[in-house]
Every structure is written in structure tokens, then in C-alpha cells.
Amino acid sequence: MPIRALTETIIDQIAAGEVVERPASVVKELVENAIDAGARRIEIVTAGGGKSLIRISDDGHGIPAAELPLAVRRHCTSKLTDDLAAIATLGFRGEALPSIGSVARLTLRSRHRGSEDAHEIEVHGGRTSAVRPAAHGAGTVVEVRDLFHAVPARLKFLKSERAETAAITDVVRRIAIAAPRVRFELAGADRVPLTLEAGDGLARISAVVGADFASDSIPIDASRDGVALTGFAGLPTTGRGNAQFQYVYVNGRPVRDKMMLSALRGAYADAMARDRHPVAVLFLEIDPALVDVNVHPAKADVRFRDPGLVRGLIVGAIREALAARGLSRSAQGAAEMMDRFQTGGDASAPAWQPSFATGGFRPAFAERSQAPYRAEASPFRPLEPDARGAASSGDVGSDFAPAARMADPNPDTAPGDHPLGAARAQVHDNYVIAETPDGIVIVDQHAAHERLVYETLKTAIHGRPLPAQFLLLPEIVDLPSDDADRLATAAEALERFGLSLERFGPGAVAVRSTPAILGAVDVPALVRDLADELAEDETVEGLKGRIDAVAATIACHGSVRSGRRLRAEEMNALLRQMEATPGSGTCNHGRPTFVALKLVDIERLFGRR
Ligand code: ADP
Ligand code: MG
Picture (cartoon, rainbow, N blue to C red):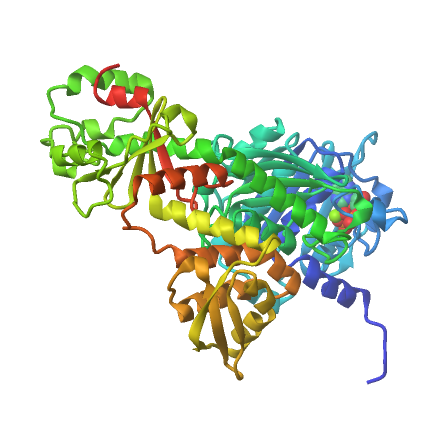
């Protein structure tokens, strides 16, 4: 076949393949057009998951009748002049309307601001009608019917009507967060209607992400080298099972940028289990010349001139905000914990129930208060006399096994000297109880230890390498060859933690030493977990960003210390180390390492208040 130019219709259909992947992408393009037109009200109606109908009406400035044919012609736009680096609108490629017109039946009806009457134009299977007068109020309405009917291959790949309906809702919510002053109404026989009233940014975020989000998140406000990051980062305890509740914007444009999302994940690596996903709304403001939004026709990908700067800003700002909350967050768990207390006897119940209600506690245990008090089941069972004796005699190192081990009331450690107080006892071989001036603190020694190991590992990244414990014989661990490759690539970084390994044939690595801080470890399990961790991000740049996650994985393997009896000095040393360690309020998995109970709450518990 000789070389020929493609017809306009085929060119539009090819472009459509990229711009309109599914009904939700049509909605995205049309809503963006309405916002670019200065609309204050946007109404979206769908049917059949957007496959049979999408209708979007706005009260924006409209299109002059004479320009309607241009609006539906490829590469015609009113938005871009000749500077791709100065894009201030959501659209700029002049591709959406012609693309949609090539794969659906498109009607564009509009009354331009200042004009007396409305006009419409229709595109069907790439063929454009003449402009004709129409009845319409102010603004524009775009109607898309029978999407992809001309492209059965595409139709086949669409998901269920329900899934497409949900995808449309998601797109609208994402755009709506960045346009709080615009009222959105989403309706149709295929869905539960959604109305988002015009308001301020925070009200819109609450309406979209959930009313609790404001109280369950920390405000972010940071900038670095002229790049600004604002928004809200969800508390680690509110992590979700998928990444759907991450809303990321660059200069007001909703994006799904891999680097930014991975930075967000990295920011929470210390605070959240690896299979949980943070909830966040982040707005990045950057000089348009430093970011390329013209990477993909759908404009959801962006490319930064300096990705390291953006990544650092996101990770740094969120980590700092989380760390600043570290101590207070642990205290929040206390209210929940109060619910689990068994209290002594049922006689006192009526007397203190009302005060609980006013104190803001949910007295869940009040319903259970009929049950007889069982000392051995109570988390705060009375100390046995023997234990007390042991404490007063200072005999804390013996193998005598009382219900609680008493810490030596060290005259050097008064409760008021330190935020986490003075250690008083260890119970169940894992919980250290400390006294503070206004309450008590219970430390989960296992979680705290894991956290401290992790922080030590992290300092090794920038400081001196950690001591290694050499194995008598190198341990050979079999792995898939790409895992072995990744580990070998990361060998230098791992060496800093005291983990020394090298490639051993095609599908194995030889481990020569492990981090001494961990003690005895299951080497194959550690190495395989690390390989999984490294596989999450392929690039070397990615490895640098993931080093914290690698440290967390290693720390996890080292926490063998629970169940160990601690001496008084060790307990106090643990508390002091926690105070000196940033972020020690939660373990690597986001669980608190300690809880604090205020004396007033304890007194309430006993009906003293
Ligand atoms: P782009 O948005 O990239 O310019 P489109 O194909 O989406 O390309 O739209 C083409 C042109 O049609 C826009 O530049 C704009 O001038 C006009 N237009 C489209 N939708 C609207 C609308 N809802 N209100 C006013 N003008 C619109
Ligand atoms: Mg557009």
C-alpha cells in the first residue's frame, strides 16, 4: 500500500484512544471545560454508567455561534496562545471535543455571554453538522450519547455499569476539591445523586473526603525553593485499604503522579503498615515553567524539572507534621482504652455513670459492669503483697515472679522530671508502667523497642555505618533472579546497616553479616522481605527514597525483646530513649508505643469525680 495521509476522522479516533479511555474521562474533560469557562454551577447527568448518556450543563461564558465549528475541530482552542510553559487553564490541547465527537454522538449547545440567543452543533461519528439556532439559557450544555458505539473494541473493555458510574463520581469529587467555589450536582438514574454546595476549601474537602477528615488529619503548610505544599494529611490510624482517598493537585489540576504518590507513601512509611494507605489532600503550587503537564493527553501525569525537590518537600512536610503530633496522638488512644476497663463491682455503677457521659467517654463497660469483678482478668489488677515487698527491698533483679515487677523508686527520677515519667513497674513481661505528674503512662516495650531500633537504623543512613555481626559461614539464600539483582544493587546501602550480602550465582545471594543490633535473626526471612520491599520501586533513585522502608523492614525482624524482664534502670533508660527519639510515639506499624492516662480519668473511673 502506498503512503497516504490518514483521514481527519481516523486521526481523531486515534487521539480519542488516549483522551477518552472510558466514560469518566469524558466527564473529566467536559467538567474541566466548564471550569475553564468560569462556571459557578455545573450539573452532570449520566445514564448507563455514562455509556448511553453524559450531559454536562454550566453557567460559564459560553461559546459564540461563529466559533462552534472550531470548538469541535482538532487542535483548536481558546486557551493556549504560544507559550506551553504558561498554562493557567485545565485544558489547552484542543483535543477533547473532537475526540469525543469521533467516538460518540456529541451535541454542543451554547449561548455566549452578551448574546441574545443560543446555537448548537452536532458531531456524530466524526461528521460535523451545520450550526443551527437552539433554545437554551445562559452557558453551555454538552451532551454525549452512545459513547464508543462506533468503536466496539473499546466498548468491550469497559467495566460494569456500576464500576463506570463509580469512576465518574470519583472524577467529579477529585475535580470538585480543587474548585470549592463551584456548585456541583451529579445525578442520573444509574446513581445516588451527589450535590456539593459552593463554599470554602475546607468545607468542600469535608464534603468529599468525609466529615471526620478535618479532625482526623493534620494541616500541612510548607514551602521550599519557591514550591509550596498545603493540604491535610490523615492521621496514621485512619489509613485505608487502598489509595483511593489520596487527592493530589498540581497548580489546581488533579493528577495521578507516581512520584508524588510514592512520596506520600514514603512519608508514612514509619507510621503505617505497608498494606495500609494514607488519606490525604495535597495541593502543590509551583512555577508552571518548572512542571510539564503535557506528558499525556489525559493530563493526569506531570513531569517536574526537579522531582527530588518536590519529593523532599512532600516527605519532609508530612513527616514533620506527623512527628509533631507523635506524643499527643498516643494519649488519644486512652479514651478507647478506658472503654475496655473492668471496674470493681456493680454497686457503684449508677453513681458515676452520668459523670462519664458528661466527661465525653462512651461507657461501654458500664453495660458489662454487672459482671463480677475478677482481679486476675483486670488489666490493673491489684499488686500482690509480695511484689510490693520486693520493691521496697529493692530486689528487682531476682527470678521471683510476682504479678508485677516493681521498679526501684529511684530518688533521681521524680515523675515530673520527664515527659514519660518515672518507671514504677513492669507487668506481663512487656508493659512498663510509669508515673507522670498528672497520670500514668503504659509503654508497650516490644513496640517501643522496634521503634528505637528503626530510628537507630535510620541514623546510620546518614552517619556512621552500624556494627555488623559476622556469620560463621555465609548464608546462601535462594531467590528469583530479579530479586537477587535488586538486592545486589542495594548492597552498598544495606552495608550501612551492617547487612553484607553479594550476588551468588543467578538465583541467590550470599549473606556474610547481619546488623548486630538485631541479635540472632532468621536470615532468609529478612532477605526475602527486603527483596519485596525493594521490588516496590525499580529505580536507584527509588531505592534512596525507600531506604526508610528498608530500615523499617529490618527493624521488624529485630524486635525479639518482648517478654524480657527489665530491671528498673532498663525501664527508665527505655523511657528516656523514647523521649529522645523523634516519632517514638508510634511503632513502625502506626500502633502507639505508649498510652497515657490522666489522673482525672482514673479518678472518674473510680467515681471520685
Ligand atoms: P481545550 O479545552 O483543550 O481548549 P476542548 O476540545 O476541550 O479543548 O474545547 C475546545 C474549545 O471549546 C475550548 O478551548 C473552549 O473555547 C470551547 N469550550 C468547550 N467547552 C466549553 C464550555 N463548557 N464553555 C465554554 N467554552 C467551551
Ligand atoms: Mg478541554
